[in-house]
Each structure stands twice: as structure tokens, then as C-alpha cells.
Image: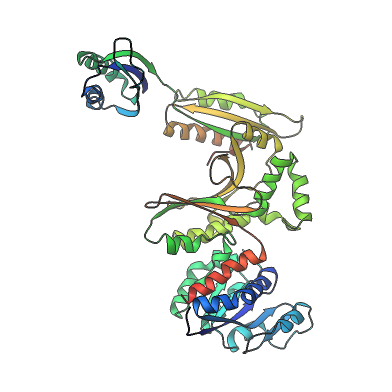
Length: 163
Length: 333
């Protein structure tokens, strides 16, 4: 899972390594580190914004380990849907039941349709839609696109994917 | 400045827009090329449906004009010109036929068997019989150059083969058809539907009377096959390409794309895994592939140099002739 974490470090040498070491010890993958040296807390600590990927079961042990090392963990939040993409559809979208296709993606558990804009110029004319899909990771996003493409092909709808 | 001059005699087979462009750029650039590269370019023969003319001393402008006016049909065939008139380089600029490769294919084979190098803008023979032609060229100790067949003036084949030598190429994707790019650009800019913009493009000569090959992605697919074979060493044909054109693209779709920060472009995409695809794709507005009008563009992904993007004019007689000319000069430098 992807987790964002706000922590606070003492303003003495060696604190950054002290805070990051346990993450790799628990098999975590650090995606981003933002060090706010210029925004000291009233207690003189330095805030740090982390985004990391880690197995869900290792998260609480990691937090315990950080606390043992004197690192303040201020906030933990799960960033569930990490990646998103826009896909365009052209065809008889509504008549061919777009609801079902969206449900297919949403029911995967790893991807969701988070936005849908539809243009319907006339009853018999082809409509166009832009669909934003979010997923927990890049691979899952590709899987979601494959679901959409398979459904679209069956219904004679054209899919325009991003490069 | 090189003092020793080498005379390079040239025949031009197929004297339409591109063939005329080649004769024109040779006339314009002859002195510059002679002083810079030590090569004296001389057009000694031209063959076309209008007729065949030859002069070992070099054709005069008057003779070329007379041929274009249909006043000087000559008395030999194109194949006789290739075979019997002594020259070093045959420039093949007849129209493309994707199915048979003819008449270009026979011209090229005859040229190699007569000991000529071949420089061509003709996509048909290269896309259809690349491997056979390269093997024949090697057997005869001659060269086959075809930069003009992909992307017009935009250098891509020699860019990869010469300038990026040593790099492994993982993918090439880009806009390889100026007509489609023009139509999609105009639809967005002028808020006009596909059919309207297509008609306009036909009126100003950007789209052909029968635009099928351009708008249905066939032309892009053929160029992709040439890249697949020449850059990636595949043995692909047109049938290996998944092709979708731009005829279904609605104005609404372009607007929705715009709202989401994208443009729609007809993208040809080939990678080292052998995937060959032509399809309308969403291109982020800030991506280098977002070029407008009739421009062509290609992003080459390499293992050492990273991504390299080239942009250039994809069509036009002088632009195509530019690629032919650099291929000719490249044979001797």
C-alpha cells in the first residue's frame, strides 16, 4: 500500500538516516521525501513529508520503531489510488450501457472510474466521453484499461488511450 | 574545399512532384555540393509515363521542361534507361503501391543488377520487400537509401543508424502523416467537424482526392513498417500493424480531450518487442509530440541517449527532395 506520513525530526545531525533506515528494514520503498528545514515546529523540530510503499502488515511495526528512535509521527494517511489516466470513448456510449463497464472497473477493488464527462450531440449521433480512471498502481491501471478496451470492443466503441 | 571532383551520374525514375523536386534541388545545390563535398552531381536520365530522356553529358533544363510539357517523349523505356545508360545512382520516385510495390520494385531490382546505388522516396518496395532488397544490394555491393520514405524532410532513419549508432532503440512513436495532423489541428482550432476540414484540406491540396490511405492510417502504418524493418531489424509487413484511423474522431472528443489537458493525434508506435500500432492517442499538451499543422514528429527512445525528438516537414516536393539529396551525398562521404 502507499502511505503518506508526516514526521518530525530533532535538529541534530544523523536524524534523517535514523528515520529512513527502518523503512528499508521493513521492505518499504520511499517514493518521495520533502525536508522542510525552513518550517521548524515551535518545539524546534524539523518536519518531513514522506510518501512510501510498504506492506500493510509492516506499517504499525514501522511506526513503533520510528517512535522508539525518537521520531515524532504526526500523521499517517493511506494514499489508495496512486495513478490515474484519462481515456476517451467515441460511439454509442449510453445506449451500450456504460454503467456496466464502470461497474466492472470499480468492482476490481484496485481501480475506479473517478470522473466521467459525456457529450451527446443527438439521439442517433455518436457520443463522446472522457473517463478518468484511478488505480492503486501503474500495473493495475493497465489492467483497468484492458477491461475498458475489452468492453468497448464488444460494444463497437472506439477507445483513445494516452501515449 | 575539396579539389578532386568525383562525377556522380544520376537517373530519376518517376518524374512527378518529388522527381521534379529532386531535379530542382540538384540544380540549385550542385555548385555548393561540388565545393563542399567534392561531388559533381549530374542528372543523365529521367523516365516517366510522359517519356524517357537521357544525355550522358547531363540533361539540359530545356530538355527537362520539354519532357514535363510532353514534347520530348524519347524512344527508350525506363528499364532500358536504368540498364543501358551509364550512371551511379538511380533515384526512384514513382508513386507508392503498398500491395505490389510496383513499378518501384522492378526499377530497384534492375538498378542493383545494373550496378547502381538506389535512393528512393517510394514506400511500397521498402515496406514490402525490405530484406530481399537489402540482401540484393549487399550481393551487388551497392547501397539502398530511403530516408525520404518516412517523415519527408525530417531525418529519422539516418539519425538512428548514423548519429545514434551504438544506442539500442527501444521504441519510436510519432506523427508520420501530415494530412491527418492537419485535419486534427484544424478541427480543434476552427471548431469544425471532420468532414468539413477534410474537404478544405482536399481543396488546398493537403489531402488527396481519395484520402483513404491517409485518414485510415494506412500511410502511417507503411512508414511504421519501414522503421520496424530498418531500425529494429524486424521482417514486418503491413499486415502486422494494428491500424485505426481518424475518421471517427468527433469534435466533442477533441473538446473533451482539450478540457483534460490533451490533444488527439494519430500516433504510429513501434517498439523492440515487435508491437506495431497506428491509432488516435491522447497526447499531453506539453508533450513534444504535440506539433500542429502538417508537421511530422517522432520521439525515439534509446538506452543511452534517452529520448530524442525530431520535428520536420513531412511532405512537399522540395522537402522530400532534401532527404533524397542528403542520401545521395551520404553515399559518397
